Length: 373
Image (tube, rainbow, N blue to C red; front, side):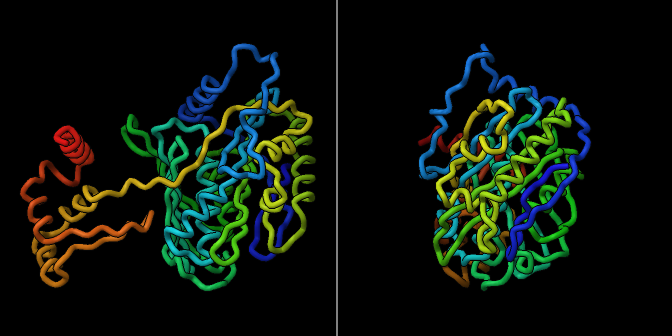
């Protein structure tokens, strides 16, 4: 059994979660082999310095990954305060939507840690609550973007804002894959990390403890982050008992504050991802795997806007231009507003090539324009 922190909007609880037996698919095995090749050192007997991973006062956003000395437990810890603040400004979010999106993006970074740079993880929480859903997209390089359906939602409990009827959907993709991987499960609690933990156990057979939270007051996030503890092949009962005790101690040190979720109490006190990972792997000979610096990065552009315009019926486009004089659109992910005049729209239609429904045609057209410039 594994003690993990379950974050409620009103109370911090201690929940006992059973290790789910792991069933490794070929893709799971390939991912583990990739991570091992990426982070393994030439001489495992040499102690590894933690200096490159130090992040005093969590000044920078960071995702830090480590593994137990016996290779049977992987721990990933994130601090994402700057990322949440940037999204608050971009989307003009109130406290509850900022909390929801902050938790979702943090979970995306944690779950997706170890992906190849080109790989993308999209998580969607679509409930019947007034938040009207939330979406997060994360790349293996740590590039993040996301949005919520109702950024100006009033102050209500997070679970109520998300709703208890709906789905959690996960899509993973890579340019070399013939088809994306899709997974879906039902919303159970309205707690984003708990519902994603249930998804990982049911759909991906990943045995782990996942926690994420934020501290948002007004338009400022003072702390945000989370952790995921994942059981790998060969994990024995003694190792599990040690990490259970360590997690129980971590929850206790975080503080039993109704307004402070795990691990944001520790982050608020200056504990860094390295510190938290060291607490979880205390007595298990922690070895660092690597780190990622999360950044908010959107891929919107005038070209992508026009691609969407081309998917509309031309008569509808002409009708929009006739009524509004200009074509205007706002990016869901970063809030940037794009405007195109009727003359510009007409010129782009004349210069357009290929099929707008095909990604390869669109990328080829972009490449031709770059070469022309």
